[in-house]
Structures are given as structure tokens and as C-alpha cells.
Length: 217
Image 1: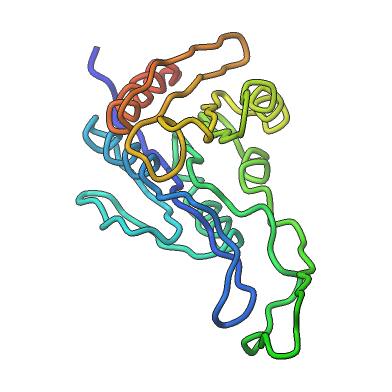
Image 2: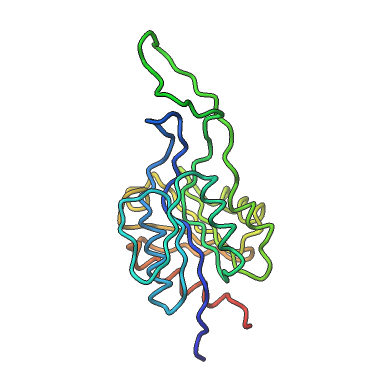
């Protein structure tokens, strides 16, 4: 049976939360996994919208890229694109915290030996979007330190996801900024531990895994 083309909405990369005009809070995400997923979905014949935080990866041909900076920016872009999507893959590493206030001028170090930031939570993008889930399939990522399975299972149920991809970022073959990944896929009723794969191969296999779980129109 010929597969029908789907619209994949994929997030990638880190977010940056401004402290002042010079500094920001962020993380080590390179965006490689999210970009590999976008390219794999495109190569499988699907339409792709990629909402990307700041990365050093050129925009992939044939993919509409929406660049964003902060978690709030990413939520706005994803919420705008969600109604047209059949599948949401939240591969971005969104900063969990942001400064309560952004300083209008650079913080000076003169006369200081310590500096305390007052932080507040950023929006939980996936939980927010899951409220508008409808019939679309939603996929999350759980990048943890140590055994990722318990937290991945909690997120799967708490955020009403169809699938979550869990990995231990302290592993040398599965952390940030590397070209391989070693993941475990969890659904409500199954667990699939995959071997170490290149992010390109993992993306291809994950897109195929998702395609088999899309209900017929």
C-alpha cells in the first residue's frame, strides 16, 4: 500500500533565555537529532516544518525552517503550525528556566564577587501543545543523566504522548554534540531498546516507526 504524505512538525536545537543584552542561559544541544529527523521525514516523502533554536547547521533544502530564540518564541511558532500537522516531534532541548527580568544593560562585574539570578520556569511546550492533540501523533524526547526510563515513562503519561524517545546524555555515544545516539523508545504498552546508531540512521528508523503508527485517514 502506498503511504500517504504527512505533515511533520519538528522542533530542534536549544533555546536561549536572555539575561542581559550580552548573556543568556542555554544548553549544549547542537540540533543534529532534530535536523536529521527533518531530513529523514522529507526523504520519506513527507512535508516538513522545522522550528529551530539557534544552531550552526544550514537550513536543509526542501524544508520550511522557522528560526526562533527563546522557549516562548518556540511555543508561539509551534502553536501556529500545529493545526496543519499530522505528527509533532519535539526534539528541541528547551531551556527549563529563564531570568524573571531581563536587564536592559550589561551586568558589570566591578565590585561583585557573587551574582544571584532569580529564575522562573519557561513554558512546558509539549504539555501545552498536547492539550490540542486531536488525532495527531505526538512524540517527545527525554534526555536524562543516568537511567532515563522512569522519567521518560512519567513524561509519556503526564503529557499524553504517543511515543517518547529516551536517552542518557552522559553516555559518550548518546550525548550532546556527537553524531551517534543510543535510545529507548517507549509507548503506552511497549519498550524498544535500540543499539547505538548514527543520528541519520536513527532518524530514518524513527520516521519509519512513526509511519506504522499513523491511523488511516
